Length: 523
Image (cartoon, rainbow, N blue to C red):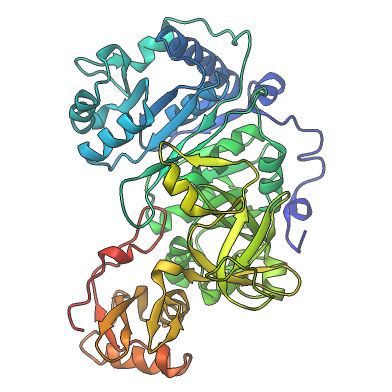
């Protein structure tokens, strides 16, 4: 592991001989704090284990059988962990989904997943209720968390009716998440449930270790939406490794630093957009907070501009870890030292993961040549009830998320961009992420996104939308300064031909640019 890795910054004895697996941790350290909620409330491992056992029995009493699905529409809360752990020891699928969904989106997930029980936050019953009606979910299987609501089963009453004894025959469950891609309705990534007892797999433990995260009485900040794949995985693994999880819901930029300082956070998962915003805070604001406790700042979900990453390493130290993954599976990871030695890489493949770069005819490309990135998932999956989508995404057992990149001679993976985002101008490929990285390096740019604009002569030309930093004078030649900045760092055909200044750049909650929502009117 590179400089500043997990083992090099821990205290003597921390992590050595620590139990692994939620049940084991709760048995050995029942008094250790498991979760700190947003309002400051705490629950210990022993208390959480008792509630998980009660919930497991309650789901069985409601008639949910192994292999069936429990869905949840929740903000970041303790209920997420209780549901994930309970389904994870009852042989069930757990499907958390965005609490920003509209009723039609909720209905689609519930019908497609066949959810037998649905748990909804009390503040969302008005949105969810009509969707549950349309999906035909019976009232006795509609559970409300965080209070009471007419026509709903109260979560706490459900638990109170059951004993806190563990199930006689625990069985591993799984998570079935919905991923939308660029077109069509969301599809669920479904894996066969393992015939094994609950607990983290060797693959998951290797993934965490490659991201600098290991077992012990550490603290992990969970501030990204838990219904997304990566935040949910890191949060769940925190409890499998004995960490104390500090929950936050949509913290402001400075709040991230306050939480790290207040709770002496060891590990956190975030996205490049957050890193960029943290670096844009005034130096005197950043200096107010002690971040020296951080052992691993893990980022993924979207490309990280090299300038942002270098400055983050300079600030936090060599504790940044990056991974490349999709809802369909993890692929690579890299620590700070290896990234600094090979700037731009997203790492080497995880254990048991194989990566290929293929041309348009499905033939392997030699090192250094850009093509479609395919990887062989450790755990095979299918898109639920969509055989054709599964077939289109696979090639000889290898899957692609649509990303393009290349492998170097030593097997390190470098990403360029998604194939669907590629701009072809005059027959030449332009990768938006490269242009965005240059724009984001400009001190007057808070956020940026690059898209292709139709052009009769060239097919497409490069266009950009930019959110200026507060205080930037848009009327004082900002666009002209940005064009000049790009010309100093990019080949002429990559320089944006049109730049529009916007109040916001559309991004998903996972930090991905929503290019399909961008319309450049000045083209």
